[in-house]
Image (cartoon, rainbow, N blue to C red; front, side, top):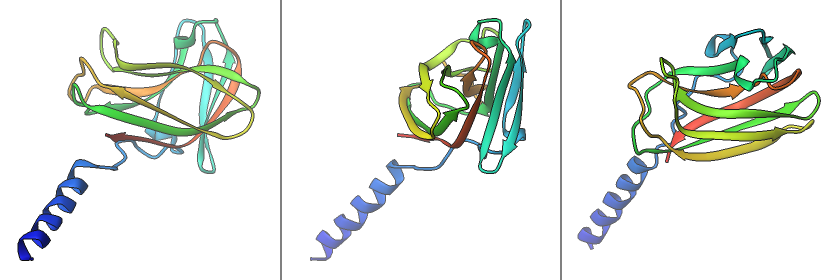
Length: 162
């Protein structure tokens, strides 16, 4: 009987150690959590509004990465599966890029790029990816926004190891 009880405790402990639901990201609704970038003629802004971060593109070149915003400094592991989840809405429907990449020259993607259609009501989005060719503490996760003028609201963004 003690042996069975000990096995049950061991199984529960191992299971909880393997399933780490720790959010690897900074608070979504804090401007300082994000690195907001405007390049080659793309223009926009970022601000906090209650529980959301609000990204506004005021001038679009038609190229999505000309306005983008990332959470940086992520220590992701090669071969590890992650799940990113967030809620989003747009002032008018828009498409954005959700991407994970390294935050240094050559800026390559590390296993995630999704074209996401965002409607006018908050909706939950969730994507799994396996990280590959990462850099220690030099990975980033965020949005390419510059394809069109518009406003995006994002809240409750998490990144967890699966």
